[in-house]
Length: 190
Length: 147
Image (cartoon, rainbow over all chains, first blue to last red):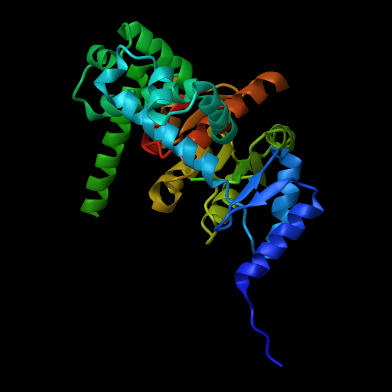
C-alpha cells in the first residue's frame, strides 16, 4: 500500500488541532500566518511552541521582530543624519514608520529587551566610540556631531553607559593597538 | 538576529560565587543556559573543544592554574571567540591591573560587590548590554565597560 501526502492540508490540520487544544481564538491566513484574537501569555506561547515542535513546525514572530528591526534601522539613520538636531527622536521614528510612538515603544521593549530611549543612548555612545577610534575628530567635534550640548554632557553620558570616560576608552584602544602591533612584529621576527 | 537564550560560562574557584551568579542569572527575563568551571585550565580546555562558542564568559581575576590574563590572551588569539563577551571580576584591583585586563581583551571589568542587591544590578546591566551587542550588530571591539 502506498499513501500520498498533501503537506499543506496536513500542516493546517495539525496547526488547527493544536490551536483548538489550547482553546485559542484564531483565524488561519495563507502561508502559515495565524492571526490570534487575543495576545498569548508567555506561558501559553511556550506551550504552543512546544506542541508544534514535535511536528517540526516552528513559530516565528516575524511581524514584531521585523518591526523592531525597522525601528532599529530608523534610529541608526536618525543618529547619523543632520536632521537629528531640530526633531525629537519619538516624532522622527513615529513619522517614518507610520505608527503611534506608544505602540512602537511597547513592541520594541517587548522584543528588544530595552526601551527605545535606552537603545538610542546606546547607539549614540557606540557612534561616539566609532568616531573616537577613527581619530578624525576631537571630543568637542564629536559632541557637536551627536548633538550634545557640550563635551561635559557627552562625557557624563558616556560614563553613565560604560562606566569609563571617553579619554580612558581612547587610551585602552590605543594600548590594544600597540600590543597587537608589537605581537605582529614579534611573530614576524620568529 | 532573534535569539532564544544566552549561553553563559562561569569560572571561579569559589563555589559560593558560582551559586550566587547562577541564582541571579536564573531570575532573568532572557533565558540563560549556564556552565561552570573551577579553574582557568578547565575553562580553556572546554572552550578549545569543538563547541558552540558561548555568548558570555564571566571569570574571576584570581583563577587557579591559569589566571584570567592568560585565559584572555588565549581567547584573543583565536578568532572564533570574536563574538564572545568576556567579563573579569574581582573585589579590588589596582589601576594598572585594571588596565591590563582591558588591554588583554576583556570587554567588561566588574568590581564584585559585597551584597546580593548590587551584584544583581551589575550582572543585569552587563547581560543586557551584551544582549544588545549580540542582537543589534554593534562593533564588539569597542565594547569596553566597567561596573
